Amino acid sequence: MENFGAEKIFVAIFFFFGVMILFMRPPFQLMDEINHFPRAWQISEGIFLSPTMTIREFEGGGDFQSKKIFDLNRAPADAWDDKIYIAEVPVSFLPDAFIVDANHRHYVHAFAADDVKKFLSTPLDADEREPVLIPNTGVYSPLTYFPQAVVAFLGRALNLDAGKIFYLMGLGGLIFVAACVFLSMKFLPEAKQLIFLSAMLPMFLVEAASTSADAVTFGVCFLGTAWLLSLRRSTEKFSRAEIFGLIILSIMLACAKSVYGTILLLYFLIPRERFKNFWTLGAAILFLNLFVSAAWSWLSIKFLGVELYTNYHLGFTETNAAAQKIFLAEHPTKFFVAMINSFVEMPEWYWMNFIGSWGFLWNVTLPMMFYVLYSILLIFFALTNELNFKLGERGLLIFAAAVSTLGFFFVHYLKWSPVGGEFVIGVQGRYFVPLAPMIFFALTFLPPMRHKNLIATAAGVFSGATMLLANFFAFY
Image 1 (tube, helix red, strand yellow):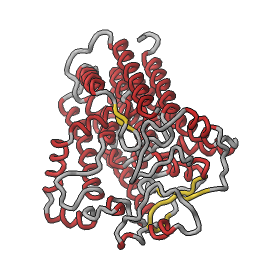
Image 2: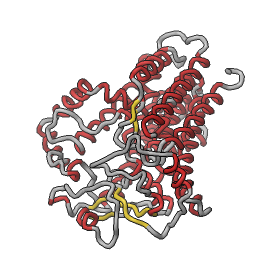
Image 3: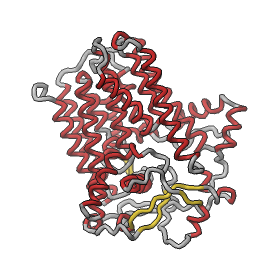
Image 4: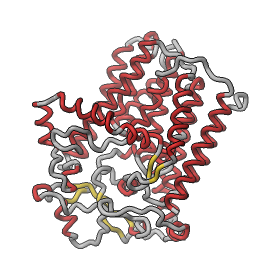
């Protein structure tokens, strides 16, 4: 396997199971995919800044009929004039068999193969449209959906059926992620088995084979981490291509999810002699990341006059971002207490969602034995990878992951948690997936194992097969 190139076999296994889960998982049966697909579609039409509509206009119905996938009629009176992102989507993409109401119902054991076959042969009628609320994805940058949007554009140009375009969009995301995983293994051959097993996490694989923005986010974070760490191995001067790559990575991380910009801190593990103005370049890359993130936020939120979607719009009035800011200013330690309480009280939830749980409401889970066995495998490969970092380098890896973790807990405490709450609401275990390489790479201290390629191959196939079985029995 080593002579042939184990990474070729690994990426082939990843792609095979990705394609299988793409076509086995019914459309939109992934958390927030009904928000992600419309955003990707409107970007494919050149609409980079999402249109908006007030809750009053949307719930009032206007001159359109909407399935109201997100029903906001429970929003408090003072929120009815808040602007919410929308996307106009061809009705042919929204068959009743797959569309669910996020507030009231979801599907399990409700699908048949005929549902998918019918969707695949549904003609695309681009003129008959209806608005769909995309309250939590309209803020996402166009680059976050680049592969899916390109495929949607091509599918529309070729006049393909709606179902075929939908699945090809997921395939476009999968191809992008597979390329990122393959390059990650090439950049860090010492840890390619660990990278492969991380990519074979059911949570990683199911998101990669979808229209979700997580596909690009996961791929970019894995590739960025591996590439930056690979730059440590040389003392030659930076090439123009490498400097250009740093700029692109900085922008992509800002557009994917700004909270993962801490991956750029790995730049400071690169030998200083590689660039004359090493510290200046590092500061410029970090500044560029922050600037792009802030500029897009201003353009997509402040410029459009949008109120970011929170639990408050669903009628949970104990959640109030403005009041939470005031509370934190007066009680700054309460956030840290809430974050610690969340880790103490909900470790199984984070763990299971990190390894793999999907469905519209995370209602598809794997056998408990799988979670235990795969976790042991991941830890064992993390302890025996061959990167051999120094203590300070390990510290930087952990610090970067910790800052990102602090970031998404803080945002969710503001947006989704009750004012002064004892817990942070809304954080999902899959948010840790892009940070997994940094955390796992920092753990190594044991000698490398024997037959690691064969063990990793068997573990990857075991993960993929278990995921497909769980998906089949859950939905069909």
